[in-house]
Image (cartoon, rainbow, N blue to C red; front, side, top):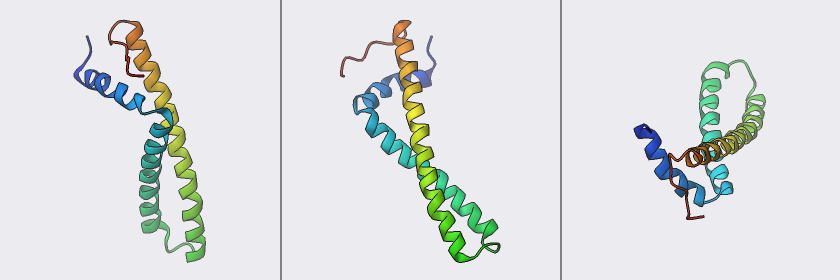
Length: 102
């Protein structure tokens, strides 16, 4: 028996999957990377701004912006793989209907 959140996920994942892996990784990667970056930037701004020169501070912001975006893309690629494995496993065990929209 599937739980309510799993049933909802089973309804939404085929739609998300039909839009493609690249779109999923780019959109989710940007969102995740930017969210992590903004949290990091706010925390370092409040705690570290007195310790570093403005030039050093801006260099750190640029470097970490790129790193957190890459991290967001990696997390999203892993999430895509995990969601596909979960969906395929549920189909294999008869707990979901095969998506025929692809």
